[in-house]
Amino acid sequence: MPPRARARCAGLPAEFHRADATAFLAGTERRRNAVVSRFGAVWFHDPRRLLPLVRDRLGPGGLLAFSHAPALPGCYGPQGTHSGGLRGRPLAVRRWSYTPRRWTGLLRAAGFERVDAAVLPAPDPAGLGTLMVRAWLPAAP
Image (cartoon, rainbow, N blue to C red; front, side, top):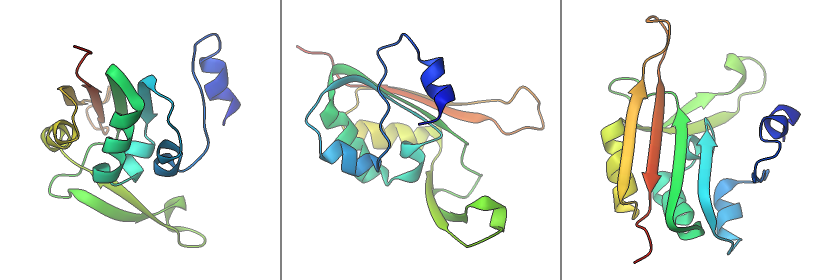
């Protein structure tokens, strides 16, 4: 894990794990209060597989928060790309890009009760915004 991430979270009850997200979540029974993915696992895993795993590892009222680049208009679902700016050895990387409305549907289908999803505009109007999503599980009865 990059030292900057650890430094930013110094003093917080944060854990860092370097592993395939679906394999890690499938291999642990530990419950968490929140799962955060910043331009990470949620963007690079099939949400129909990942979201139920996250749901099963969150406690009642648990929060999933994630961000990534917004989908390009008309380009939704899993998409391939090359890493490294098309230089060097090709490495296909799949990303799942959806509109905020579609993410809301996927999260609700996975059992999340309340979802807040929106594309925040970039500070520079010519720049690319950021998809920001927060989804909560139902609280304990």
